[in-house]
Length: 281
Length: 147
Image (cartoon, rainbow over all chains, first blue to last red; front, side, top):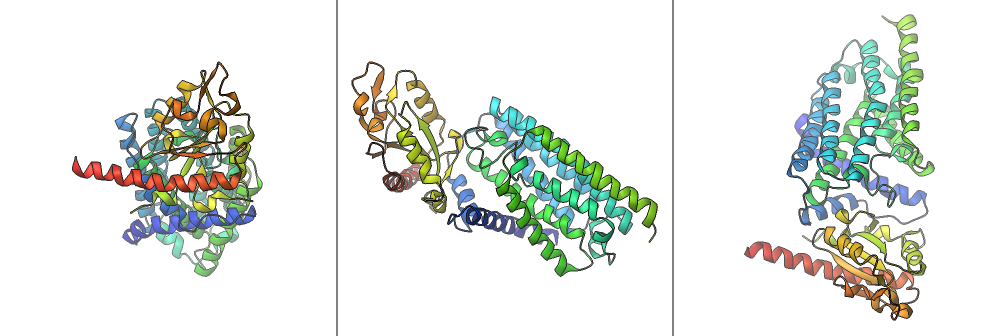
C-alpha cells in the first residue's frame, strides 16, 4: 500500500491540482488550462537552467520532498498517526529552513508566514489525532480506517475544525499568506521566491503528496463506509475550491484566530463533550 | 520533450510606459482573453519566469533594473517588447531621459507594435515568442550534449 502510494500519489495529486485549476477557471467564467497543466508545469521546470543561491537550499528542499513522501507512506502503511504528524511537521520545517537558507527578504517574509501558519494549524491536527484515538481506541491509521464505529457522529466538531485547517494546509485563498499562485506582485511568491527550475518542481511534487495525505485524513472520519468517505473527500475538496474563489487573502492574525479558534471551539469542545458523555460507548 | 511551450510563465515589467500597454497586457489575463488556457501564468518573480514582457521605453532610471531582472531569469528565456515605446521609444524617443527601445538595454526577441498594443496582438507576439523559446531550449540542450 505504501509503495503504491509513493508511485501513484504524485499522479493523483497532480490530477487533483489540474481539476482544481479547471474548476477555478469555470467558476470565474473562463475556459481554464488543460487538466494536465500541472504536469506540464513540472516537466517544464525540469527543463530550466539550475539557478541556485545557496547549495544548502537544494538539500533542504529534497528533504522536504522526502519527508512529505515518508508522511504519506506512513499513512498508507497504516502506521501511528502521531509519528505521521511528526514527520509532516518536520517536512514543513525543512521547507522553512530552505527559504531561510536563500538570502532574500522575500523568502524571509514567506518563511515567517509559513511558520505562523504552521503554528496556526498544528493544534487542530493534534486534536484530530486525539479525537480519533478517543473514539476508536487506537492511534494506528489501519485500525482507525477499518473501524466500524461511525467516527463522524462522535467527532462532528473535530471534522469541521479539520476542514478549517485544511484550507490553510492546501494554501487556499483566505489563508494563502506564505505562498500563492495568485499573489502576483504583492508577495512575489513568498516562500518559494528564491527557488527555480528543478527545485521548484520538487516543491510542487511535495504539494501533490501532501494533498493526497490530507484528503486521506478526511477519509478516516468515514472509515465505516468507504463510498461515503470518497464522496465526502470530493465534496470537501470542491468546498475548498469554492472558498478559494470567494475569499480574498487575509492577514496572518486572521489565520491564527481561525486555526486556534477552530481548535479551541470546534475541536476542544467536541472532545470535552465526548469525554464526559460518550466515552466507552 | 518540449514542455516549455505548454507552460510559459510570464513576468510583466513596466519600463516607464504610459500604462496603456500595461492594461492591455493585464486584459489578456482576464476572463475575456484568458491566456491561462495556454498555461500562461503571470508570476511577478523573475526566477520563475520564462517570458519577459516589457512595456514602455526604458529610461535612465530603470535601465539597471531592466538589466537586473533580465539577468535573474534562468535560461531559456525570451523578451517580448510590447508597444511602440518598447520597440523604438515611440513619441518619447527624443526625450533626454529615454534610452529608446528595450533593445538598447537587453536583447529583444519579439516586437509587438501598437499604441496601445491590442490584446490579440500581444497574445500573437507571445505565441511567436514560444517558438523562439523552444529553439533556445533545443540550442541549450545541444550545448550541454557537446560539453
